[in-house]
Amino acid sequence: MTALGEERTTMELRDRAPTETSDRQLPREVPPRVAIAFDQLTDPEQAAVLAALQALERDGAQALSPAAGALRLEGPEPLYVLRPAPDVRVIVRAGAEPPIEVMDIVRPAALRNFAHAT
Image (cartoon, rainbow, N blue to C red; front, side, top):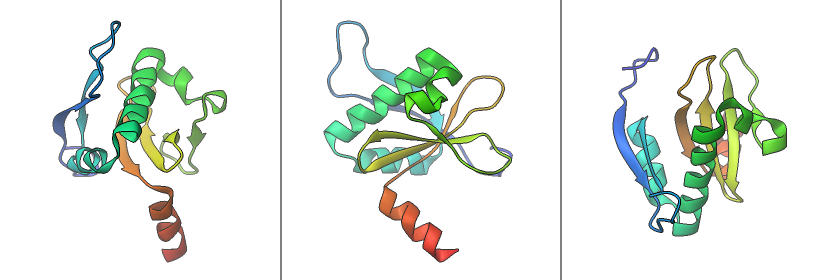
């Protein structure tokens, strides 16, 4: 359980196209909604999400810079939005120490709906 009282499940997010340099498996503890959202993505979107998460794994907080395309969300928590594909956003929490947590995978339309609801 996290500080927010939410369960975490260990899941493997897999790319269906292994490469010579990596088996492209990224084991992570993620909320079940992340695994469900990942499964709803198209194959190219899944590959893009995995590439973004692998960059985070490899480069750490440097992958969260504006130059890398990450956007810090307003508020006290260190939350960032990644844009791995045109219609996919990955929300991650990056504290002072690793690991970086994947909080959610959403489509921009869902974010717009939440923004209008508040």
